[in-house]
Image (cartoon, rainbow over all chains, first blue to last red; front, side, top):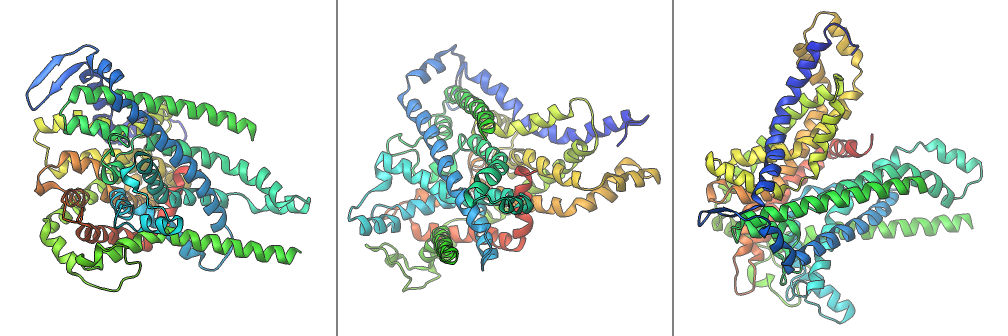
Length: 295
Length: 280
């Protein structure tokens, strides 16, 4: 509304309305971040009652911890591959569902169902399907290729199985977002291009892609940040194994916290995770600006 | 040639769609089939592709095996409260962001949105210690505080978009008629965007229903565990065949049914709410 004599009063109203959400948010974000940074310089174990200043010891330990290297690698591997697959497959599904056909409504409802179910159910369900003896996926692949593969017992098998299960769960959701993006493109543009004699490929390249790009960018950024914090699927599907091959960052932090009660070290690892999110976030923002210029 | 082209096109489209629907639904089929197959038939090599036996025994054993009704009650209480609190606080904040311009409001909103990037696991230790001191561990209330906070930024973002769609003239007219600020907020604005608030309530309910991390770390004893934690607990048991997949698939089916029902009922509005965040 227009600025007037009562604008000061409205400012107070605005602050009063935002305050509850802000307090709640600060309590569970700013406070933990500050306290985590503090704890990272301490050796803390609540079980035996240790709480002593440790300087950079936690960070030195982190630098020489081989599991941390494995963990950072898998976190990036998981994030990058999941996003690559779900973005390309999601685009394909969205283009398919954007066509006119019978049962379109049915197919769109199906899109929402994997999004709506608990990730832990997906994780354990896929663990069951990838089971080396009784698993249905293992059996189907063995029948087709004649080669029986113990997915979750082999490090690379486990890494790929987690990515596959994750892509299965999130591709339909990505397709929903892309489909909404496709439907926001004005049809007149395609009609006008057709009249001017543009081919299907040209329409796709010069209308669909540029119009869809912002939605794709937003989706990729959102998922990058979200996937770097993945926990449930690893907790349910592999428990970080075999060995430490799938100990994604959040899982490693969880283990240090609740299995080893190493609160200080877990806090140092949390700081590493902040940096990972920050760095990849910034890299992505720079890349997306590049891509937008290319389009 | 054009006709032939179209036909192959259509054929490819349908083939891909059938494949997509099959791949998407297959895990549901498999979990469901597993839940109604007798235990001694479940562990067959090779696995039985089509159900030949039917039993509800897995469900009754699952219910006796864990404090099922307590977990169900906790899950409902946790999800309903987290959803209600986040939607209420988000509505207030979103209204302020959408309707009142003040210096720094954009920065403040940006900070809210950027806080989505904070990995939940990194907030666990400080909250765990604090909850231990104020006696909130093993209490649903503590989990609700963390959970409702987690989903608040996205809820604010979506509700802002919905509020901005409502013409401001309606509120201005009411103001000219002498209605006070909060009267306008509750009597005029809230009813107008109630459908969007309801949508966000359903979306947040589903998100909370599915949440594992917070209930897992803040609720250690049986009286505060949710169904998601219960499922991981059953998964820790082992039998002669490995994991008790009979019980796990039965519990999974019970956890899937409520959200699938919600999705079928509210399909259209859920999609609208979810896509509003990504497409302006």
